[in-house]
Length: 108
Image 1 (cartoon, rainbow, N blue to C red):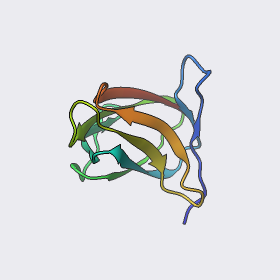
Image 2 (spheres, helix red, strand yellow; image 1 turned 90 degrees about the vertical axis):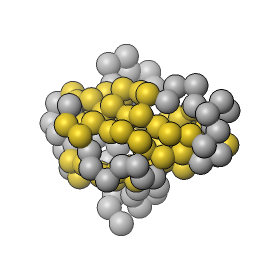
Image 3 (cartoon, one colour; image 1 turned 30 degrees about the vertical axis):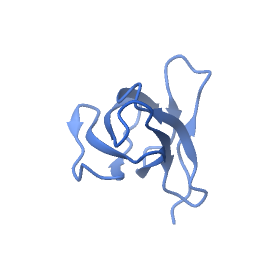
Image 4 (tube, rainbow, N blue to C red; image 1 turned 135 degrees about the vertical axis):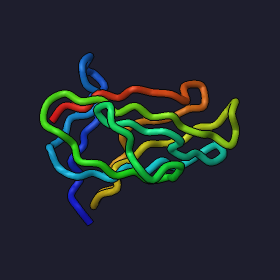
């Protein structure tokens, strides 16, 4: 399993995650109901393989965007976590049906 490369940066006003320009796989897990990636764009380009609970893409150098639309089985109270699939399965951020469409910023 690859090493974890993305790190949450909750106090950085310009980036949600910091990482290295390498391939990454992300997974979303439901804690209240189930959740999936429904639509995903990385730096403006569609990420293939959705709907799914995992996505993969290559992080590019610089500051990039990850636009995600989540689908929740419980459209009111649905919740879960976004994690990087890696040696430590690092949890990156909580996700919620209150905000099903999100733009994340990644700095590498």
